[in-house]
Length: 173
Image 1 (cartoon, helix red, strand yellow):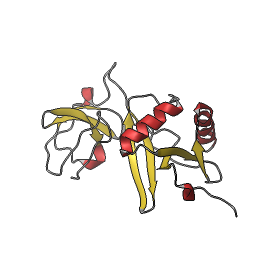
Image 2 (image 1 turned 90 degrees about the vertical axis):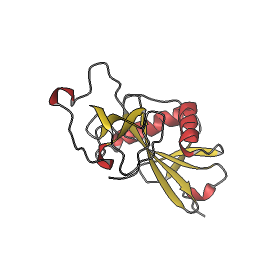
Image 3 (image 1 turned 45 degrees about the vertical axis):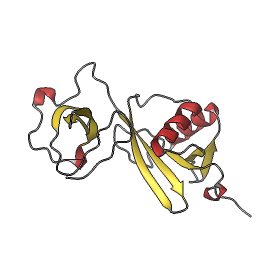
Image 4 (image 1 turned 180 degrees about the horizontal axis):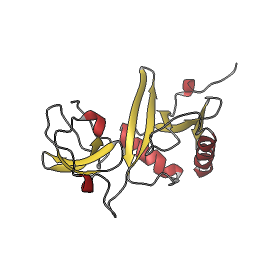
């Protein structure tokens, strides 16, 4: 139904009209399949399923990898680019600052970036070390009832900005 550009090696690139051979359901929102001699995962909402998976294969098989989704935003002077990044980590995984920074550089193809999160007052807070990641996760858990997310999505979101762009931060004069 729609084109889809994968954000990681685990995700397929799809073009409208592609016929995908379904392999398994990853979770409520994602499927795994093969197209153009490549195998990967993709959001079910981007395709029209012509022949559904048999009921016995509809759930992820035991031992098969599960995928979680991390919502990321690239803040630029021209607007905001949103990406849902599929990762093979469990929702309980707590990444390090360096892991998050490296992942965001790969996703957005930018090197000179800062990673941030929004606090309870909706202010953007720059992440500089592992302790900041822990604080982001703690604050996200406290706000979990305020924001509804899919079951496979991390509670926290990442906001990426150019390191030199301080205009994204709320500052009182």
